[in-house]
Image 1 (cartoon, one colour):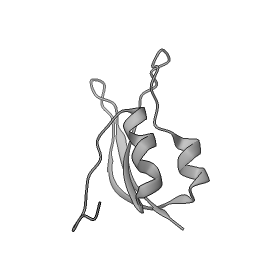
Image 2 (spheres, one colour; image 1 turned 180 degrees about the vertical axis):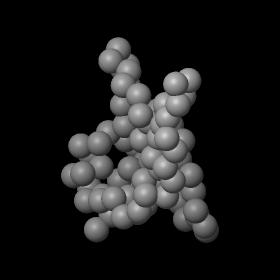
Image 3 (cartoon, rainbow, N blue to C red; image 1 turned 90 degrees about the vertical axis):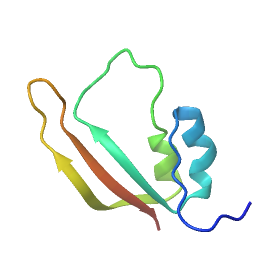
Length: 78
């Protein structure tokens, strides 16, 4: 499939695993909260194995008492 222009993939762990080998750039939101009982995670090791590295912190928001902070980081494949 050939697409013109950017395509945004919003998924869960399985969706990300399917599309990760086909993308050149990732925009990931890193949340400042730990969820110990969560059962689905972004495939970070797969991302590293495919050669993605952080190139830009696009947005940072400090957390508050009511909401966790987050960073939006752009990764590109080298």
